[in-house]
Structure formats: structure tokens, C-alpha cells
Picture 1 (spheres, rainbow, N blue to C red):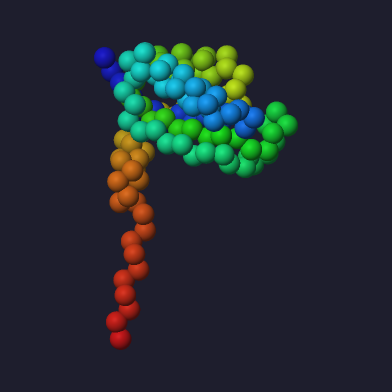
Picture 2: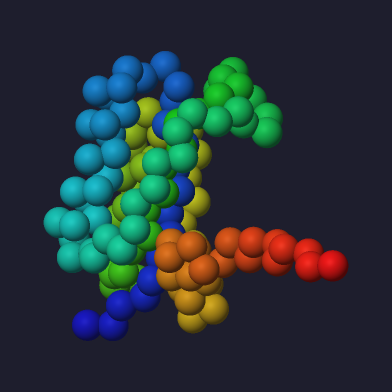
Amino acid sequence: MFQNQYETVFILTPVLSEAQIKDTVEKFKSVLTENGAEILNEEVWGLKKLAYPIQHKTTGYYQLFEFKSAPTLVATLETEYKRDERIMRFLTTKLDKHAAAYSVRRKSGASKSKEAAPVTE
């Protein structure tokens, strides 16, 4: 089956407890794995200030998943996001070969700026 590489970021409402956040993240992780997705990377960005208020809230809990799956899974995942009142916003993007290569470099630390070479006099 043909698979694309995707990245999805969602913002959870900040009023959730740590356990509720963990449960919600696990729910969406299982939506991906139960539908045949291979999770390549998972990042917890934590509580961040929003650029503008969403539902009268100024902060949100960010979570990122990078995964490979069939294109049909994205619609299923986004339907689940819309049904869950704990999700304030979400965005799923298909990564092209350049974005996928950058993601690999970023995870390995190769994209970080090189240390400044010592100045010799």
C-alpha cells in the first residue's frame, strides 16, 4: 500500500490535568496505530502561549506526531480531532522529500548551527 509521510500538530485546552492530557495524547496515538500508521517521531512541546485567544484561552498544550500512513487515514484522524472537545486546533501536513529529510536531520541534531570556530591570532 502506498504511504506518505505526515506531520500533525494539535493543541489541547490548558484546563486539562496531566492525566487527561496523557489520555488524550494516547487516544490519538492509538487512532494512528490502529489504522496502520507507523509513528516516526513524537514531540511534546508542552504549554505555550497562543498568538491569539482561542475559546477565550491564551495558552494551549502542544503535541506533534510524525507518521507514515495511507492518505485515507488523515481524514479519519481529523474527524477524531473535530469530535474531541479537548482539541482547540489541529493541523496535519504532508511532508515532501525535502521536509522529511530536514526532519531526520533535525532529530539527529545535524541541523543545529555549528559551534563557532575558535579565533586564532
